[in-house]
Length: 584
Image (tube, rainbow, N blue to C red; front, side, top):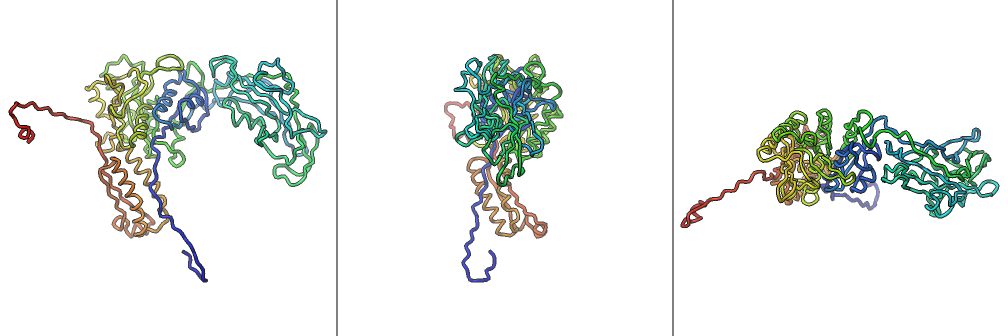
């Protein structure tokens, strides 16, 4: 505390309640090609329904990636998705008349600014959209009249300088003209009733009724660009056409003096207008995945910074080339807090291969394309599942399912439990496997770090392995041990940040041990470790280290091991033999 120089009472408090925090272990991330949705940004998805709403339906060209995300969401509820498009992808835009609105001016030049309505996201799917606008005189002859209660009118607090009514409101209808969103051509997707062209227009509850704000904040299909932002004019005198407005009082948003506004009266839309969208590019609906080469690795770069993005399971989807795998492997090994899941490239086109050839392909993939890493998990191929949206069967890589059983294990047990076997390794939605290895082929691929997924009569499709891709025999060649250490390292590192800039003395070191030891004791009680020891004293915090402003703690862990091999010995004996003698 500070030294006191006069009589007083000083109250201080010191917080010694810091604990080792819980850390998330079930956040998955992946990059895919989709027909719709935000591009090149991380989007959080928590359910299959939201996944489809955000990124559209699966098509022949993106089924493997689309179902990768959908399959994980059948196990877990925390998926980070990046939609990767080509660098030249474009949003579809209006081909018909635009909308004009009030725009502020500096008093010398009248600004005539025309905003544009475009598809919310890039891609050819946006070309299916039409937008219909109706002004104050629309009647029952308009195709969309029955979607609204009345004709557009004037916003109550907006009148022109002469005190007469001006019609600032329009109706907006978004239509799936070609039926590519809904399957029904002409289906109405969204409607916006009596939104205003004026930036100051308000609803009765005080919220903005400015058409740009309303559409950009709520629409799933369109957005307004090239339009002025909402602003405060400092007056409610409102709508004018080529009329000077004298402002009174200071206004931080506009200059003092005379300001001119220009407006295109909504009588223009008395005859409703229709605007067709064209020009959307990036992903199509049939044929090629993209127009040009798609660098999926660029999308995964968004997951590179562990301080800004919390992710624990990376799904490799249909990535099989060594260059992309090397890029992703570097990412997870640099982060050191997540695991990459990959599937051996045994796809529909290679079902004709013999089991021996498939086993060789798995081994070659693990050794030549992936390499040794405890942060990578490889499975034995693809599963066959039914596509409800297109009424056909698909071959989908299993890595999302393997990551999914890890997530399910976290929910029902703990991250340090093995996700494999009959108790926790059930694979969902599988009607067949591209490679269903028998025992001899499992013996071939499992020592090389490829985890077999097999069909067991009466049990279903089961993950029958819990190895990482690490070639070196050690505890880290098991999924549960790798994930155990990720949890321990991440949690204890988060708690250790509160020791930064404290004194490196006996008190701080004891405080650190008191912080970490209860956490490790709890993990041991939950069967995560056999034993542990924390060394943080003068033996590893030497005077030289203290002088370098360093702090050291050595944490020794004996991880629990899973049973991979069971030997059952049955001994037949004669009737008169004593079991005590046989047992001895």
